[in-house]
Image: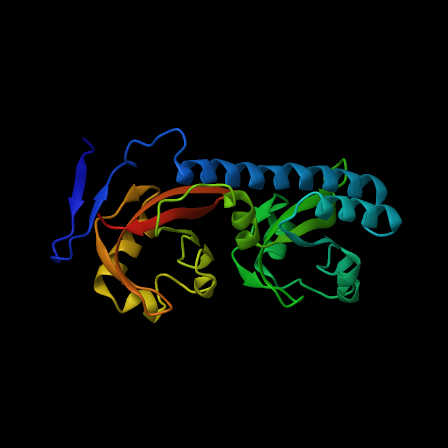
Length: 265
């Protein structure tokens, strides 16, 4: 039996398990966790290869375009891929319909600043790009053999598109929903698309319900676990009693919470 570590004394019926309940090998939550982690690591490896090619061939010109086209075409969750010069200007973009944004400065974006300062790969928080889409940016520095900074290479991708593709063949319990969130509460994916982009910690849909808020605090504060039953009203106004299980994944110091909410028994 799992050890009960802490009980909220608010009379809300919310509790937390120190570790996930024993899961079957075909547990859809753990299967999706593995697939998402593998997809992040695949993008990371591909960006490392692209950075090496750009360091060899230059961050501008036909070869740079070919490298970026390869990077985007092989990853269906990608929105666009860019080569960024040391001043933070996007000098080459792929696919072709994003080329009007070439010459645009993104020097003030936190992940661009971090890559230039630390010269290490980064995974950004969810943000709205100059191209006008909500997305996450994974970025690698492009370095000379002696370590000189030539710029960076970026892949802008949609976490929701990634989850939808990787979860398409999973058999979920009846009435359940998947969610993916940053640890600051920003919702990256929900089976109810109207929740994407909302903040679990501050949006009135969650924050004004004490039971939901207590569950959210547990989910955002712990790497994995399970809540007890809580009353939840979704964006469509449908009320239900739910429980949630969640796990974590991430890369480059960024952690995401992946959860499965389902009807309470």
